[in-house]
Image (cartoon, rainbow over all chains, first blue to last red; front, side, top):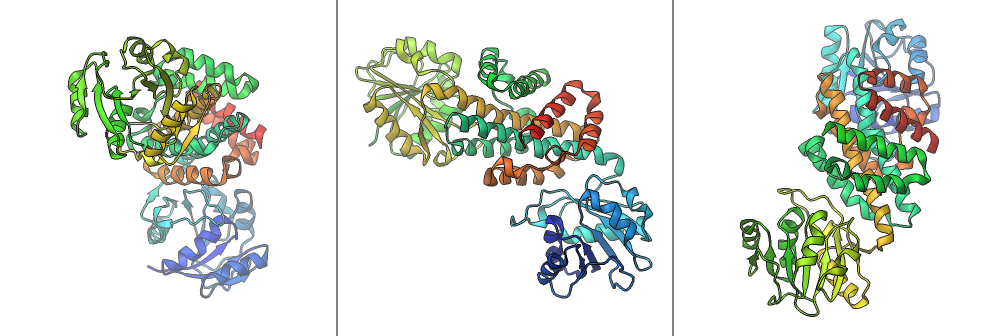
Length: 258
Length: 258
């Protein structure tokens, strides 16, 4: 099933999504951007899409309208967009509830959330990106599912009630792992040591964690109950009280759950 | 320069090291293990090595003796081992100081520390493992360096005074990233959500972090200063006070350094 789709947004998600939609055989009819130049540039990456800077889509050929916008912008654009009859309006956010689209002129609403971190200039293969979808209307849900499956091998139905848990888990898995690496970089830099030497360890640790599960993969002084080492590390970090406290608290939690 | 080497230990490091030494053209003369069966099994993986369960190496042909033992076992074995004249004794630990080998019968001592996490059954390519080396004797240091370079493309001279900082940094980079993944697994499991859907995000986040540096790679509610989301996540975690505290403290640190 191929769709005619309008994409609203010109950021990281939109710029990855527009060419991926066309590669999957869909037609991108319009790209909306407050910055029309950015919208025009994104249109250049596909065959027929027209750039658009106003929200009157009453003459659009599209049947699905994707709000690939920042969380803050979604409700404003949803409230103002003028849609053709029988349109489906979806957003791509993992945090904004579906209900926020309820005030729009859309006949049907849903969520099409690609659970991945998108960075301009970094290739992302959508086939490996999990898409989390939701709709209260069964027919709409089936259409969103077909659209998601045309882009990715991993499509999950996730209800709004589970979305918060998922986001908290993603913060630990992504933002907090990144911050642990940041703290590690700083400790190395402060001592004049080359951070490069830790990269193979990080890659192998994460790979092991994902393969064996993090419980089995854990190593280090906390899981060994090596209090002398824990104490010397804590003392070492005394130049930064907050980081020392982070060290202590995570170590305690590793001790407690093992 | 090819060496004759005795390896003491039959654990994860030893079992990866013995075949790697032979692949690099060295001769493993003996493998010592308190469990002689484990030593014999490890000897089977190479050409000539003999299993050994006593520490009298006075007749050994080896010139380098590698203590690939747990931190706790190193000093006992170093104290008891009987070595030929002019022998070099090294250990493979990242945490045990070089000075602990000073009471041994070795003429020269050093450290040959492979900075990687080793798991039985998981292949590790030594070429990509950074080796951190140390010795107070220049000639010994050159020999250890040649040995390390025969195994790996990444060899670093790291002094004892930097070893503690390195280990603290490694705990953040490896053990703590693993624990963040563990907490993420638990949040997903508790909600009945499939942890598989977070794996592509983790892989891309880490890859981005190592490529761009963790400061530039950071995303999420803390770095955006999105206090509403931070608060709702903190409330969500109220079922586990310690994990909620970890969430709060790491988020605060992300806010403070950005």
